[in-house]
Image (tube, rainbow, N blue to C red; front, side, top):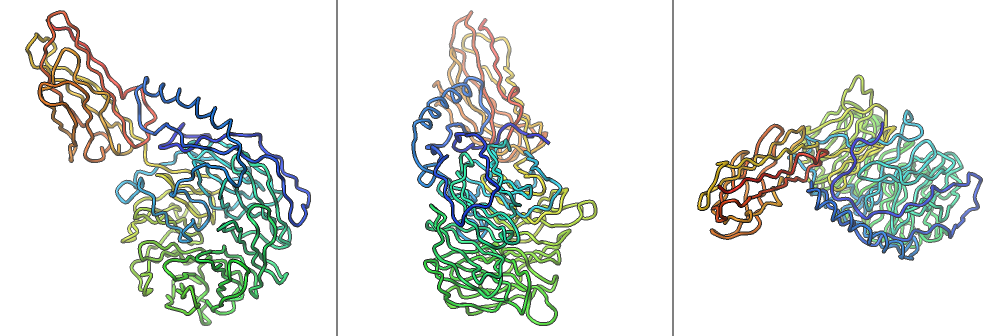
Length: 593
């Protein structure tokens, strides 16, 4: 399927696109570096904001882009020092920078509007039918994701257009980390696992590191110039720390079993879950073991990744005892002492990472149940029964939990969910066509996810329709003249933050009064004083539901003499994406008699 919409709200910094890199599939050396293809950087954000505009205003903004590209062309910085100005709300790596899979900066999507989420675009990878494990990273308006078709992709976050792809020579089931203009990602299975560093703007290879083990599950964590990754192998070294700039091995550590989980790094400590049934804490500088703590009995393929918040490590694993039930553990981050545990009787294991937000731990089980637990005590707050096993990790943003349920869509019917984080109530769901273990991420009003294809969801489209109706149509000097500005939302989505602008007290008149009628909440207007002239801007006070009308009425006094033409115009816009800009401006003229 092609791109479904041409744009989205708040585009980020425009990127300089280079040629698609060609990767060598031959066996690289243990650590190889390519000094070519470093990006020129991306020095500032695009001046274009996503609101509906009049044609003249849009033209001015488009003209403003030219100097930006000229400035970008003169920038000369390395990939490790580029100034692409990532937003704090970006999702830079699997666990996010806070190691909690919680985006506290999200303000667009929330409990009150997530039900209007709609598919904005879809990008089909080279093998859309294959089960996908890689979860997206979203940085500076670009989506980075791996695929089982042996490629890493960079996509425009607003449109889904491909910016570049890089062939790794092996399946990419780990989730990229994007830091300082570099994409770090692992690929390959069995003994062919490789960690790659790629130029985030062009996709050119910067360096690669051959692990000698399996890099199918553990996603890299990048903190303070170091890349940390777990390895599935029997080489006696299951956690690697690499220089982010050169790929040089800084240290390696043995946990006693394969490390298929993704590391969490906080306060100078690396936390990993090993399939020997223990959680390990390692010194981030030298790999020295600080402590280990059992999280279940003897287990195989214990791939759940930890989250760290407020001095506590949260992890899901096989539960204790012969029942092999799933369990959630809370450990003291400094000592490894168990603070509490919760037995998830609904399923045999937890294979995802918890999300921790606002004092609550969210984690799903293979038994189709998502649990919300008090982070301090482990007490269950609520649970949600999904249509399939919850083998992916939840994401939390602005009071909403997003979780993917694997299963047969033809039977289960719903696979990607949005739930009220406080109550567990289902707010929205979307059916998926493929089984997937990818986890959703939420950035700037969009939800990104991979299920064979990369999918992007945003608020449902609104179609605003504006008219201007003067009363009376025959006026004389000294008369009062009223202009009505009815705005219809033709839907299908709710129009959030609707504004009536480009509205002036027309020449030849003076301001008398303005009033609003229509949807609940009505709104507010800024206007000149009585008898004055100038601009009027009106903000609708609540979201406009589909098929509703909001009307502003402006009354002015005619001061112009007979024969004068009075012209009024206006434009309407909203925060919700609107694909039809042709019907949101209007102009009317009438002659004084």
